[in-house]
Length: 111
Length: 113
Image 1 (cartoon, chains in turn brown, red):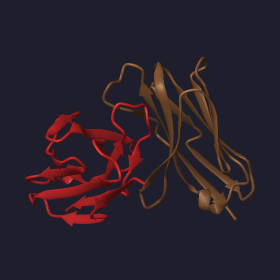
Image 2 (tube, rainbow over the protein chains, first blue to last red):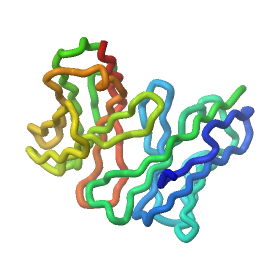
Image 3 (cartoon, each protein chain N blue to C red):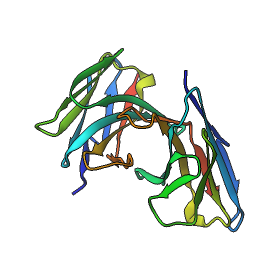
Image 4 (cartoon, rainbow over the protein chains, first blue to last red):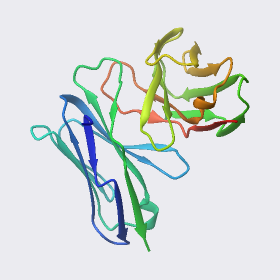
């Protein structure tokens, strides 16, 4: 079993829909990252969380440390949101920023 | 503001040829620097990280090496490329000593033929 599990693996939705991507992990962490990778490969860091909730534009990320679960939400989704969304955690025991990566969720938003 | 530059964006090299990928960071000093590789359909794997000039730590044994000749310059090299070196290589930086976010370059897509 992977230490970081994302669901769903693939998600196709219509423009305007509310999107939720989930991330569960099995290790103690000091931080959790949500990243976005576009088809060209470039990666953008969306959020880094250690507790609570963060919001940036139409994106919202939440984390429940006790349940070892995080969610990424996209409100009013748009075709330009189509990308792979990756969850990565930094274990509490880590000193070198060796992140544990989820497999990613491929999101396609249809117009 | 801080920026990270990585080049080239794409590269096609024959087996046995050398490799040099360069990454530079602007707008910060003494960053932690990282080289990741993403093989097709797989997650990111940390290859090397550096906490200072000349200080390189390798996470996996491989055909690659890294160097940090200057504070904000990180170079990924190989003397002789293998087919299995094909992949997407990402450079990243973060502020040293803090639990701050990673910032990624745009990546280099390497195809070894």
